[in-house]
Image (cartoon, rainbow over all chains, first blue to last red; front, top):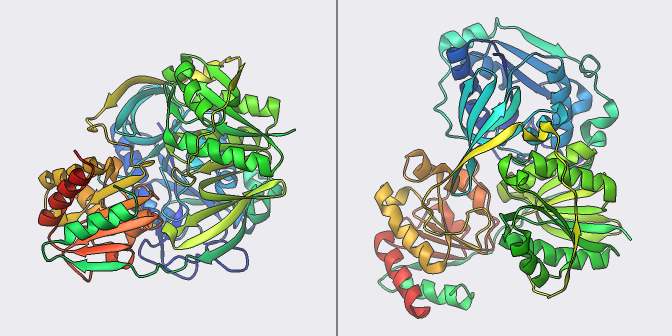
Length: 260
Length: 326
């Protein structure tokens, strides 16, 4: 079974993230960027399924020039077979649903049994892309998956629910998003990093993918950011050193604020 | 007149708190935008839900009731709400910004070809548009944004609006539920519930008590659970505690866990690394308990207590129970 893993390049977790003041898009050049940490679990799950069932693992991403940096190459170094990048400068500033639209067009040209995404990216964190992608492809969409078992034309997964999980059985092909902790992602080996450079990376232009420029990018997205500002720094609170009565002072504070 | 919808967040007719908050906000913004508020109930157990909806204004409720909603994963909700949207053309649709609410919102928006803004903490009516406030980058930046398509699909985070009761009669409008075979491809075969001790869900709790590395081991999470129970709170955990296997990932608060903004957040034995702050710094009131007075969590705290958590936290739980008279 062929598997496609959709990945995203995000700013390093520890880096300060900034919006470009001119158009309120994420300034991706001001700091280090990495493969979205949650996507590493998606790549790992795909590699494990390949090891058990055979097939090929393709890594897919989209964006303006540079979108593949540190994301697709990293996934190839971890063991994915090939990469596909939908690269078009008009894609900059695409919102979640516009992103799903582009991914869906690229996927429509590919053969796969399963599409895997991370349950969220660590920059935008909306978790909207996986289900939108499933709908656009007309496939079952199963999000927040913490366990995957493939059996022929069927997939059985655990979907995280508040306070537990549901066991879901679905037909394939399907789109799933996996949560952090579903597995223990491997590290890239030196050999993997070296061989990643030789692996095929197919670049599709917007035209190749068949996308309508009016549906993507900052202007084609159906949501618009009107303003962005840094959160005002928090006023300094009260700091108490416990000398035996700290809990009483804290209880007073909670009571004054009507939490008790 | 156009309509402003609230999609009721519920489990088998058990209406979640966030629905009352959304219905309250819906009444207010429908008034300001000259729209009719209406609610949408999709699932099972409407008889049970009716009373709650009536407490928060009542009015028109589209009721799509079918056992099929409980048998298959979300697709029946997505398809039913999407076809209702196409038919009735509401101006605004509010969903709860929780896992399922965002999934259904995203699915409906892509099916009807509009946009969706998630994780919204405040709204403001400007003409025909609702301007949404949301925190991004873990609360470091605040943005104002809007949906340009129609309807405007907006996911509202729990605890963003105060729920105010305003009893009103529920006027039911039954919606026919006809599902295609495609809606039945992902079947729910089993529901596994872990022992949650009757605590509220982290995503929508008004009060959260979280534990971190300072607890020194999984067995000490009972100290955090005990304080949470005294306050009627949910239990959260830092990445360090989750990665060490001390507490389930579902309870993780932070950049690779849940982003929460409860009324009160109590961090116990959590140093406050950027990855944790990204998940909780928009909480209304923050309390930190840590033995290290230099811990970065104290920069966020409205009340910081420097001390030994193993002494302070049990004493605080007792003090709270005493003041609550139980």
